[in-house]
Amino acid sequence: MTRNVVRTGMLATALFTMAAISPATAQETTAEVRTWSGQSVLLAGPWVEVFYTVMPRSWTGEESMAPPGGGMAPPMMGGGPQPEIRGSVQSLRSTFQEGPRPLRAQRETSVLTFSRAGVELKVPVDRLATLTIARQPVADSSLPPYVSPAHQRYAATAILTDGSRIDADYVNFGTAVLRGTTAYGRVDVPFHEIESIRFTR
Image 1: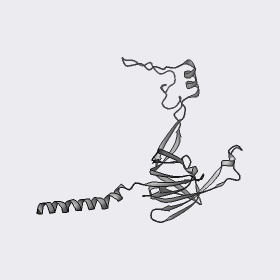
Image 2: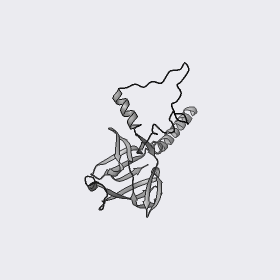
Image 3: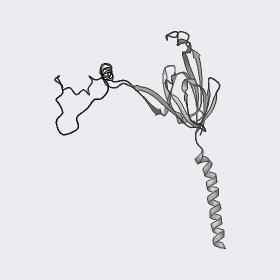
Image 4: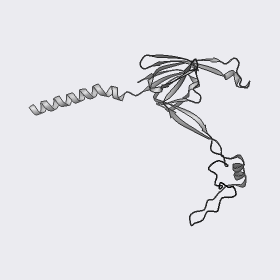
């Protein structure tokens, strides 16, 4: 009987401890996003990615197989497989005439950059509580007329998790995208479409 009472007490203690801990440990970061078009979306496990272009070295770069003194590289000897180039004459011609093509790449970033009076401040994304973005059209845009109406200048107000506030008179999120998941799958929201974000951790 005493053994059963002890076991029941231990089980009750374990269940109470799990119930007290699990809401905190199971809580996942979410981001409530509002766009300039008025849409709202709740993203689970949000993260930020940026897109960029990688320019490969040209055919005449350091990776050229030509010897330092000029001339042709010596033919490969040995029993190993010989290099082979395949493709139509047209595709090979365009490849060698144009050189290597730029590659698009993407990577996750953990910081956003805010600027005030020319001073840049890099803030970790996981320290943001809210981010409110303001925009206004650039009146003297140097862009071509067919895109200048869409040329906007962005400012932002960020409230951090410790309660401090950052008022940035300029932000350039470039190609940054806020990503997260919903019940329907992954959602990507470009930062230039975002009016506000509220993070819950």
